[in-house]
Image (cartoon, one colour):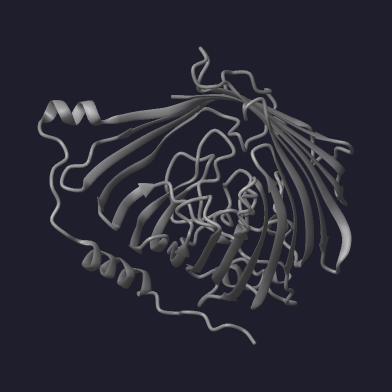
Length: 440
């Protein structure tokens, strides 16, 4: 039996009103004078240099080897609280340094491959006791609407986000978004990653001149405020206007044994349906969102502080005639491989396959040398409709971080290698990403 979907588009606005009524109280200024204001203003950011290489075992005219270099990062400024209000500003930059190939077809444009500067965040935040409200231009981090921070720039959003924490470990959250700026773009537009023009997205050409109204969502969360809580769970309702509705439930239980050997188990459930005048069907001629469910389970063992092992499974239902035969729609992660499904890998997951089916993934993470060295290895197999094995992915991710007190404290070096096999278009695909980052 399918779960009913909430259709009331006013719900997030009602949530914000309730947050304001329940959380509002008399505030006070936390700074005494202008000198204190500037002294307490926080400036932070990071510098990054990235080296990308894409190599195909069997290149084709449409799939050729690519590479890209980029240097840049972000600079963020956050003022101190005055009567509960703070303001923030974040500038992003990426510069190719003139080192990329002259032939644009040989440039990995997802890094991005060109020079780009953008104002990613410009927000006002109100925080007082149990309430937080923030907007308009900001980073938002939720399961299906997130920053996608795997390149030079983050994805950011124009809209409002709020939380209310009425009880310990219990949080209510809501958002209403109108515009989106991908990690390879410089401006906000009323679009998402199904629209053409996003490097690494999943373009549907018919959407080009039809703006979207954005998205909204509300959630109830327990234990998500601390990663070491034994029980962590969240329930989300997401409404992607004219694309889909998505109910999302994600929970995990960790058995705290007291000796660092902590087994855990988790589950996921999604219920999707189409929404209104569905743009994918109306303008893309590809069918609307499928009325389908998805499931996931994960189990593992944390052997703190040096090793974690886990195995995961996901299944996505099918519907003939729907967009991607019923695969889940993910307007703000498709092509980015940043969705919350357990089996999503570095290069892609079920969302990127754009087909229903099943996936399995095993992984191991080790921390060595007082956690200065982190090494992660994973292997995933994807059986997509009609449930034949057609792709697998192996990833290796190694990061070395200089320790506190070291002259190079804040500096890290990371190498990510991905191997995608079984794609009928190009057989095998190697992706290597080297990042040097300094956080200040």
